Structures are given as C-alpha cells and as structure tokens.
Image (cartoon, rainbow, N blue to C red; front, side, top):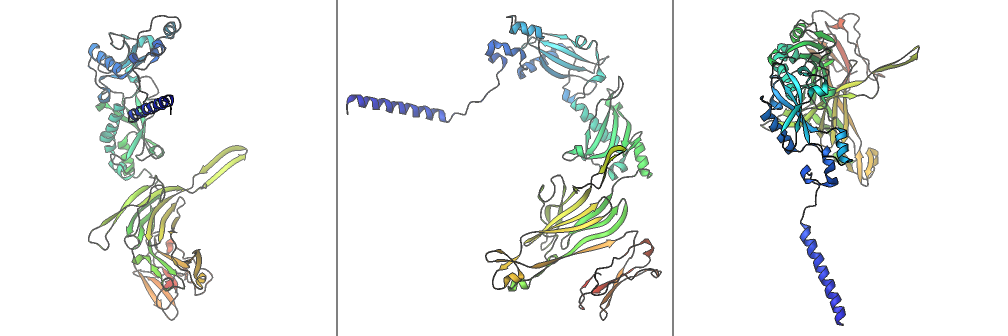
Length: 552
C-alpha cells in the first residue's frame, strides 16, 4: 500500500469521526420551535409588518398602568366590578389610518406611531358613560386622547354597554337569592330546583327602546348540552339600575302563560291553576333478589299501576350430557338485583342518560354499591307518532316525534346478561321488555348431541333451552280495586280462583267469568272497568295438580 492510499483512508476516517461527533453533540437537543417574537425582536421586511402587529402582553401592562395613573379616577378590575364602578372593558391595538400606513409602506414615509385603543366603563360618575381612549406611543405611553365623539358623533350612554361576565354572575346570584326563593313550592315540586340544577341562557337585545336594560333569561336543566333541555320557565330581569339591590323581575313566563312575577306564579301553582305537563311519574328501585321494580306509576297524574316488578327468570336446558339435561335455573335464587352490573355510558345506555347507583346487602354484614346500575333516558323510536303533509288546496306539514321514556338495568347471571327495560310511551302504554345477551351455555358435543342444540364449534354444542320471565303487574286503572286477594284451589277441576275479600256487595251480574279452559286456542282478556270496583274474580287454569299454574 503506497503513501497516497494511506493518506486518503486517513482523511476519510477523520471525516467519519467528525460526523459522528456532530451527531452525538446534537442528539440530545430539543427540536427547534417557532417562538413568538416581540416587535422589537422582529426585523423582517424592514419592520413594515409591525405596523399591524397585535399588542404584546408587556404593552398591555403598560397601557393599563398608564390609565390607572393618569385618568384621575379609581379603576376597579372588571372581573370584580359592580355597575356603579369604573373599569377597563378592553385594550386592543389601534391600527393607524390606511393613508398613513400606505405612505409608510409604499412611499417611504415615517412609521406611524404605535398606539392602543382602550374602552372604559365610567359608572362611578355623575353622568355614567362609555369612553374610548387612544393611548400612545407604545411601548412607553405618554398621552391619551378621547375619540368617543369623533367615532360615534356624541357621548355613548352607559346603558348601551356590553354586559360584563361579572354582571351575569351578579344576575345569577340575584335570581338565586331574591327571585326563586319567592316561589318555593313551584320551584321545588315542579322545576325540582336546587342551587345547581338550572342553567340560564341570555337573550338580546336588552330592550326595545332607548334606555332599556332588561333581559329575558331562559332556564334549562343544568346538564351537558343544556341548550336542548328547557324547563319552560323564563324571567325578564330589569338590571338597568346601577345599584344591584334595585334590580327587579318585571315579567315571568311559564308554560305558555305570563305572570307579573314569581310571587304570582307561586300563588297560581298553590291554588292549582297551573297544569304541570308531566306525562309519567313513578317510584323505582332494585330488589336484591328479583331485580328492578316500579311503584305508583301515574300517567298525567292518575295512578294506572300500583306495582310492576320482575319476579323470576327461569331457564330450562336440554342436552345429552348430565349437566345440561338436569339444568333448571331460577335466577332469583342467585339474586337478579345483586348481580346487576354497572352500565357503560354510550354503550349500555345513551351517553346523555341519567345514571344512578343502587345499594344492596347480601351474603355480608356490610352494604355494597353498584355504580351506575340504573339509567333513565328518552329514546326516539325512529318513526313519527303522527304526521301529515298536505298538498291539496293548502301546503303544510305537521308531525310529532315519537319518543319513549326508558328505565333500564342489566343483570349478569353467569353466562347470560339480561337487559331489563320498562318503556313508557306518549299514548299511555307501558311495555316491560327483556333482552338476553352474553354467552350461550354449552355442552361437549358427542353422539346424538345435535338433537339437543346446534354445533357452535368443533366439539361444542349450544344447548337448547327455554327462557320464562315472570312479572308482577298490579293494575289500578280506574282506581283502587281490592285490598286482599285469596287464591282458592279446586284440584279436581283444575281451577284456581282469585277472590277479592272485604267487599260489601257482590259482583255485578254482567261480570264475565274470564275463564279459559285447558286447551283453549288463545287466552281471553281480563276486562277492567270502573263499575267492577266492588268485587272482582279472575279464574286461571292450572297446569299441574301440584300447584304451578299459568294465567288464562
């Protein structure tokens, strides 16, 4: 190897080492980011773009300090100001006049002075007003001039000022402490109000003639997306006085009616002159053994059901394996309510549903909590309750959304998950519904196993089975019927008769027997009428002499 080759290799080695050292030295450095530059740091385009630049935080501080020291009046921080205070509403850059800017940009003229525009509220003056000042030059202000008359042709009256965020808070406090408290029965019983349950939405304009400063506030349920949950109550607050103790409610609107104030609304409610539109009401809970139950179900204020409750979930299996062929699950013995599972928001129930915890004590000396075990929500059924599109003589459309109220819980009992729903429709109908999901119960597939189910895997038999769900329904349509029911058995004739005890008069002659004998093609409906309140009997057919029976 000659000397020339050695030198070339040595140079290449040194270059490689140098490159590696550079990589290692820069490896730990954070990537460069674009940092905002203050005007004094920027020099692109010979500083021409600076004429349009926003104020820096430092410049804003200088403007506020200058105003505090040179206006000769006390200035209160706007976040804490009362209407009767002086405060700074805003500070922004004062963009120079176009002609002046173009002389600088295109004609080589002098750079326009950098100035700020400050808007101030003067409430603590004999003649309260809104004033605008141009403050400059920045970054070290030395002068201010009033440009209000120049811009608006005169002084700006104080009642035209935009509402501060703190004023909204003061109005909210006024409603809580002085307005809603004058209608306690209405607010608690109808609106179900507590100090955090309502959200208010402002409106504009704040009046319809010069000098007005009165705002309608629309009240909503304080939930996510509250804009879609109005409660029907609106209040008109006159907040024109600079003394907030002089603010008043000048009008109230509820459910299509106007009232002088909340006192008049409360009086109308207490005297029963207000119809509260609440289609369904009920009490609900969770039995540790049988699961979800409802009581005192009322439609438009009238009780139609005293109790609807799950009583049992029975599943009977078949298989050619001893475990499957002998299985008869009665899930109430395990505890349908005990195994109610937490509901996943957005999957088990809509994300916007109302979720509630349940508490139970079973196989322990301490109670336990199942979080989010119940949910309540409204569901759009996907088709209109009624609609009509007119294209004869006149053209119009009218329709009504078909929605239902749903109360739901889900119990996980071994392999099965039962989705329990009580559904309340707008037309007064009630539906009790259960859906089964989860996993199938299986046996090992062998021999004649396909007689007892379906193959779900190579050696897995999904076993045949039957679900039987039992509900208790105590109807009170048309009023209270019977204080005590007695079940009378006639085992020879295989009849079981419910008799209502404690009644004074016999059943009317027209009362149908409501019986269906063994082998009837279909069950007969049990009629319910107000004329049958004195006594009622219902006959059921027994399936076995040992006592189980099915209603006819």
